[in-house]
Image (cartoon, rainbow, N blue to C red; front, side):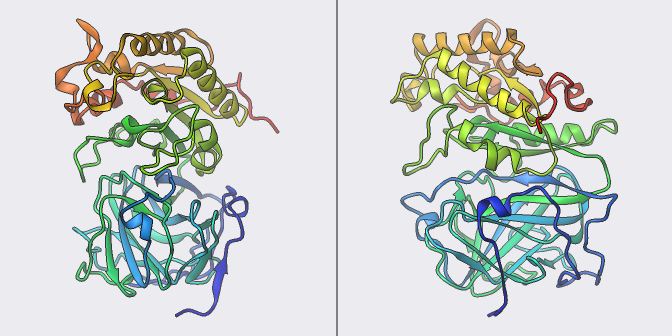
Length: 434
């Protein structure tokens, strides 16, 4: 066990946007590189993220891990020539120690491409202790990372973690092995522990481009519920691929969707849907490095989940407040219209599939389309609805539950985004406050 440990005190201390340069970070397989410090002509930008929620009442997040290595798949939106990760113990009940943390390019399953494993440090130390409620940022380390690529992040924890802060819907297999296997290239000894991300909040890349980060803030439709497992077919994934094809727009896309999330109310019980969207702004949006834009798609669960019943005006007020707060930080906010829900009542409850619910959805969409609160509108509703029956999804876009799109629907949503929205800098009418 490593005796010296980097210690992260609080969430506030760990989530600042200043860049941390390291000395010679440990290299497992790659070429030795003494220049792991972020240089003046470089910057860190988010390439992947997952919004954390409290542990569930059952499953691996409820029990946590002890003397085990977690190996987790993340999918990049932009590339770079260095990498940093962000760990979270936001909802933990005790400090968690990670004695070894590595990152490498994924080969297949739980195997790493030989020669790409990098051991990460935290303030120059391989071991880090993350208190309950805190986060920890690794030092950046040199690694060639491509856009639209899978990485494997491995976390070895020697002691019992207790219940784990996690993101329930990973759409990739998470693996665990007994003992310290973080530096292992092969996948032998690793087995599935479900399809969630544990303790892992973000991955950033070092880039010389003037790249900004788009944060997709939303619910299960942003989270990618009912998209194909392992295919990276959420609408933010499709949007990221469209952006990589453009030489004139430099943006990454990170996903801050939480299934079941609402604008106005928390849902932190078993099967947590997370804090309300307004309460998530600091740690899920503003803490992202280099954030320039937010695509906001929230409100359908405020209509569909009860109690309490929420009016369209209350949802509108919440969306307006999100825009006001983000504009105060100089961030563009593009609002997405709420997509159809007709026919979903048998699975998700009558509130989603009722005349009253449809009236609320239409009222919220009318506000989004006609107000001057936002910097632009993305009409997701028009992109996937049936033009002859606009209260329902076109069958070819429907995953089958009449609430969530399938892969084709998510792709259609991404294709509805006018990429020119991201060509400009912050809008002059929304300067950042001091």
